[in-house]
Length: 295
Image 1 (spheres, one colour):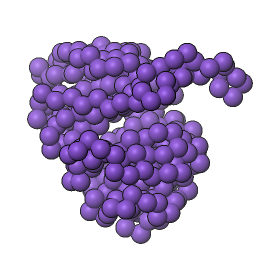
Image 2 (cartoon, rainbow, N blue to C red; image 1 turned 135 degrees about the vertical axis):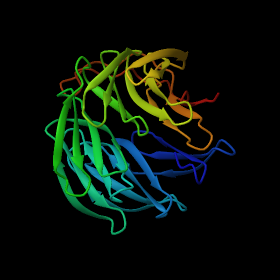
Image 3 (tube, one colour; image 1 turned 90 degrees about the vertical axis):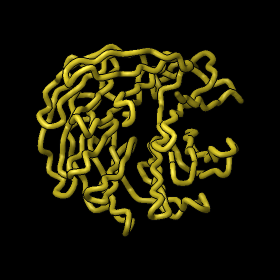
């Protein structure tokens, strides 16, 4: 989501489509992004970054022209990425490379690598120099310094397993790690202590934190959203809203507070192969859609 330009960036395996949210019309396509995962627009710099999971690169693109400007190498299978306001750096989390690639967006150069000791998924920054990132295979959150790139802490998310999405309540210092075993684990972002766990839907991938309602919202592939409300610093309750099957990726417009998810209609899965032993269901052509949620 680029709130300043009112644009939504949508990943499509080998390309990124861009939608103007004022008209709901597609305004451009950024091609040649094999295995695209994450998309990060940086309006102040007039460019953005796209992670290409199959090419092990990041595409740099122009926000106005929606054209590639070049690329940078990353670790294996770059996935989620973020910009940290404190250091000004961009951090790319390499899922198969167990690392983070560090980019200076002013010079467009790779300036470092962080060995994470596990397969990273989503990360968040606290605005004070700390980066938090879920490790999917070790069931941990690793914390490192945004400037020195030194790993400071490793916190277990047990009883959560397979954490993917991660959100941060900066005001209350709470991390929300959403996990594959249908749990959201709430941790103290200062100590790493698990303070609560709540049930969420199946097939979760993403989570956002709404500053106005002070609620975390997870996107569950089963076709639901789980809204997590805080009754106290250690007590949380949930509400469930229907979405659509496969709607696992989520972003929020910080201005309107609307949520956006994408999915499609699904057919049978293709036959398993040695390269893809657990194939995903096929997508019915022409059924891609964006879901928009408001209050």
